[in-house]
Image (cartoon, helix red, strand yellow):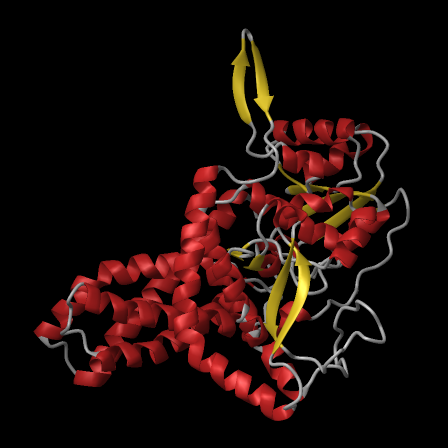
Length: 458
């Protein structure tokens, strides 16, 4: 399946989703009134353009158009529930904002039921019709570790349902030309030499093949580089990692408004959680504070609801929490699973130590350790740490440090107010998606050095 075919499938899925939303409202009107009363229907028609715009926005943010053979019904249902819930609340808000008071709340509520049912059925029918279809032929070039790692990323959208071939450490372009021509997409790992990488890219472009490059730090640094003429020579200006003053102003203003609003809304929840924590252990503190490293390596105190027993690390030293950790309290298990333990960090945002979106803050102990393995790890501290981040919504708990670091550096290089909004919206899906905290099981075969191996279809 080439790029145009993938784009066609995306268009079909988005159009189908919008038709499901429209059908849901029509069904709700019919069930509610057995008719379409003029005042109520006119109010719906006046809101319809906004429903479509909001629908397209949510479908795009939560990528409802990306479904494949390996997605479970639960995965699809989870995404649909988030989209339908948000669309319902935003539709109600729009009816007040645009004074479409004749739009019945009963119709909006009924439409959520129909919308969920129609969207789930549409996705499942689409999956049934396209199941076992080959998305494309992929060629992965890199060493054994990198090719195996990519093979086993079963949640990687491009690789699902595809035919995959791997080449480990190819000596020259000459030996892989035929495979490049036979493939639809080529993935280049970080260990390939710059010379071979450029040769493969140029050769693939000549034959209209798409190339995906896993970026090195050097390539991430070049992102968003400014070009300008130096007399008769074109030069690229590479800026240090960080945000400009106008971006900092917009980000800080948004942080203050958003954190204040959220704190007002969640204050009853925080009060209940505080009471529960105190009831479980009256002698222990409700809030857990810990020193973390913030912007420009400046230490600050982060606040969380206490989810572990007092002095949990007194005997072990700094240790990351593990599954079924016996240090976690009964209330702690719940507030960790629902991420409620993170809520006090909005006070960190309000006082300026943190931002809503940014790389997650780490302790000095772990940063010093990671700097020895990844010398560029310190670049992520050029901005304020965040409650949520690009690495958190795109990765999983088991995502490797280097892969998370790429997401963090990409975020810093490509920051925009729009990107922050998308990350915040995707965070809702992360909160209810338990697979984000689960590892994946390796199922691929071991690749022999220097050989070309065709993997079984996933």
